Image 1 (cartoon, rainbow, N blue to C red):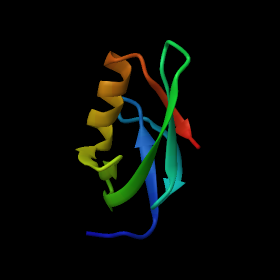
Image 2: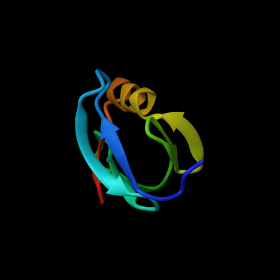
Image 3: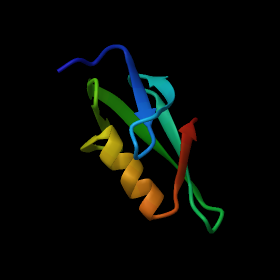
Image 4: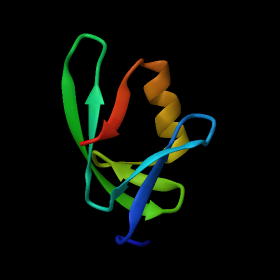
Length: 74
């Protein structure tokens, strides 16, 4: 399990959107105007720990799209 490098975030189709460094933050923006920040750690090329939850990057994007939450580098 690597804790170095960058985390490449994708959309739900797997298209690369942006990357952040391991240990970087995402800004989550909700439809009601609220924002939150999530600490991210790289697990491997396609998985990360986002706000303490281990998940696939594609699955994370699918959840964000379903819940109408946008995400971007902080």
